[in-house]
Length: 493
Image 1: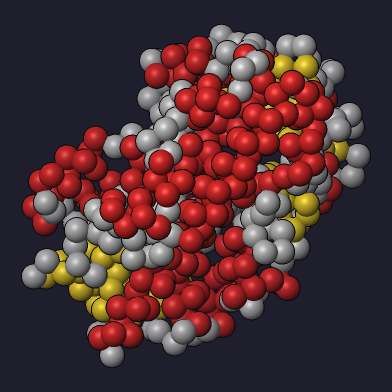
Image 2 (image 1 turned 180 degrees about the vertical axis):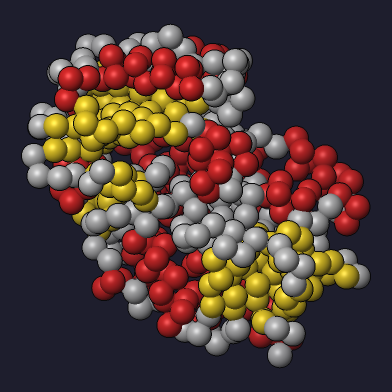
């Protein structure tokens, strides 16, 4: 065997998995098709302005949070600085601006002050989120969605709500229609309306911010994956960039290695794919090696939506009280998704308005700022993603943003855009999917693709498997998969 473990892809799940296994003394190599590590967590610079590609903030960075704990376990916590965000985000509605605080008690107290007659329901809702999140964090790496009796017995709250949507939960706890919208606003971050978003996914998302702490990386977002890569190297692991894996070698229904672009074969005891799930199974392996029912399930799964992002270098001040903002022209989440489902972006959609340089001044030259404006976007846009469409979307979102940032158009120094096609090309994520599979109940938590694949000795890490989408969840997936592999190889001696 050339290695104990081969990992495909340097997303955060793959890097965490590799670093933990290398720390425990295994021979680990990661093959990365791109020139840089990090997947979605990469950055770029244009004319002195720095932008993070698609990840701006991270949950679980406070001491004791999931990200902080993993970095501490790897001895890397001193190698990076997180800049806390509080409030974490501000939401603009037609007649109201709402804050999301980065502390659970402060956030609940704030919402209760806005809607005092709903205080009990608000408290009960967040207590439930806490219970679900606590159970999800305790899920052992051996738990399978094929074992519902154990799930029900040991994790009763998560089991009870495993098939529920956020809207069903809000209807059970909250009466005020406007408060339901406000409490459902975080579903937008998951690129789903409350009527589709899994309660399990919502609980993990909320608690990663409200208990784990939300922050940005000081400097560039890509410093986090680079830190993990350095840790892996320190423990004797190896990363080979610009090395595309063309195939996973299967013999006697077991993964025994990989075949690289130039035909080189590298063998190992186990293989981990942190790559796009469809590419992994249908291109690197092939249907003939997979159970037909499993292939049907894979082909029937729905990816998350993506983004159209406009990166702007702006002259002068932005006069914003918060770096992360989301603007909703109406109290209606469903209309936007009816358009997206049809391959369209609505005429006047909600949008994100992020000002990273307010927290990270090094992102912009002195007396200038960076601004990232984005729409949720379908991969297959009706009419296609041509230059004219991108220009029209840029003009539309700039016009909307001028309601918050006056004279924005006249102050733009630099303008760069990306589409779902750009994100797919830059990260290797099929459909430019921001969170892997859409986090609907049928695809959330343990109902995502199992990290133990139908090919023996082939495992998954990243946001295509459990726990789900987002930085903290992707890193957790790497930890869980590493534990599973370590137990197996230890037993085998």
